[in-house]
Image 1 (cartoon, rainbow, N blue to C red):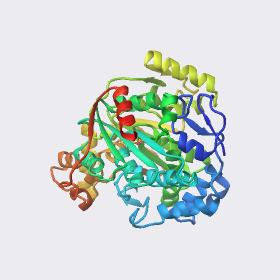
Image 2 (image 1 turned 180 degrees about the vertical axis):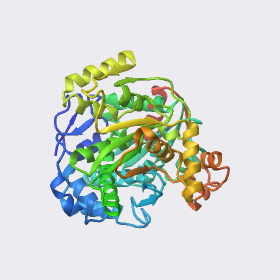
Image 3 (image 1 turned 60 degrees about the vertical axis):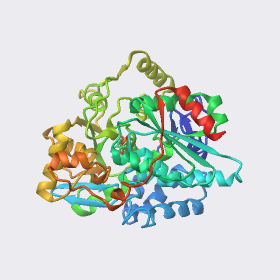
Length: 466
Ligand SMILES: *Cc1c(COP(=O)(O)O)cnc(C)c1O
């Protein structure tokens, strides 16, 4: 399998090279040249455990990594109960809803699932170069990518990580999870701006090819295709599990979305043949994506701060991959669309004959009250606590507009203990705790505060790597 850019200016490259390149060198996003069809293999895959499904899925995309190496990397990541406890993606039934719990990893959000693997990929690729290659990862985080990426690469040889977050706009716990990590290869940067500003700085530095090459700049955001690839796996395991319990032929999957990364993985799984009949996209009040899937218009507005901060995003970086497929993989049509978006802050697509944007994707949004009500009701009726992002999904999945016959699997993206303020506001009780998070309270923190300025970040990186 080779990888090409959505903008058409990158010669086909291997997965390893795509992993190292991160953002495509022409400013686009790397995508696989084709989407494998696995529908004839589902009956066999249903019998497999998570690590085995991961191996089967990932080997289709990582054809340049020998099976033996890949199996070892994958079982070392997903088969180790010290990393994912008890397993990476268990399903829990709550009332008539199913939750795919993706927060059993070390930093307790779904980001661990891809980033634990990506950290090992980087290390493997760098050590194969005999210590010749180095990597400086530059990332932007709305909260959870940061801690998961840092945890995935801390202490690994040949790698430094520079992680930007919007100063004062991530939760105190998310801040502690990143800034208490003592390893010398970890550098936290608080940017005086929004997450979109951080993402913009990252994009402009990664777009400066001379700087990118000089600093061996790499990416851990979901612009890195390896992230999306690793996330495809749990859409298979999760839909198999619900089918096993209910006997339903297929399931609907509800995905809370910010950067369109997680749901894009679901979309790939669906195209590959996973038994998913529909994706239900859920946003918070930053509803650019849900407006798009309801009207065909994508128009960038102001960022609102919500109780689900990992989704306080206006410019969804992965959306470009979706648009690329929508144009029928026509790079020049995609470039026109991206230019229109850059020039006017908006773009439009045609609706189909039934007046919908995409028959595979329904969308809705949840405001602050909806989120709190979903947390409260789930807790009071079932004693099951969900985090505010998952609650966003549940609120949308439960709304009459998205009622359906088939069972619904809600992607549960974080442990509620990461967002104790939202839980307190919703339930009136301080019930969201986890010993690993409570233990961070007294540790020393390290963080550099920088202005919202690409040059300042560039200088900081150059100063640090010497
Ligand atoms: C990152 C994140 C999301 C959004 O995921 P995307 O891939 O950006 O759509 C949702 N919930 C939590 C807890 C997250 O950390």
